[in-house]
Image (cartoon, rainbow, N blue to C red):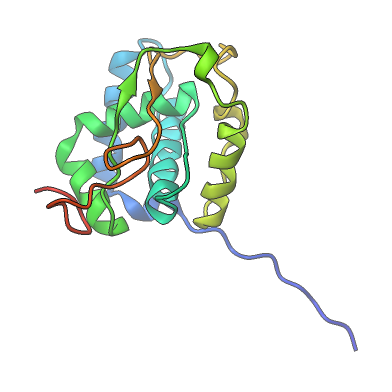
Length: 168
């Protein structure tokens, strides 16, 4: 008798946004980064949504986006209705607290931890979009870092008045 072990099926991140929401946020990435192909801009947005899902699934971890994924996350944040709808779908509102870049404060293991959390949330990270901050293979406008956890940290929800899906 043989036993076959099946690999878990990854969740489809596209299930977290409507086609219209994805197109709107993708367009914002393209407007902020002239010359970026729609396919790359969409990959960046989808990776930001995976990041948001990982943060919602693991709110006590200190997760951080890569420089490239941060571009998609910023575009998502600008679309407040899309972000609120996403929070409703995830059951958790993920806050964003940017700070000026400070290489001395950078946690070298943070990007690996974040990709592991994305996998834990059921998604497959796109490794080309998780390069370190000095890798400029994919040029984007984003240039901030994110503050550590706490009641309003970069990957934590506020327990005060937000409810499970955030402010309306």
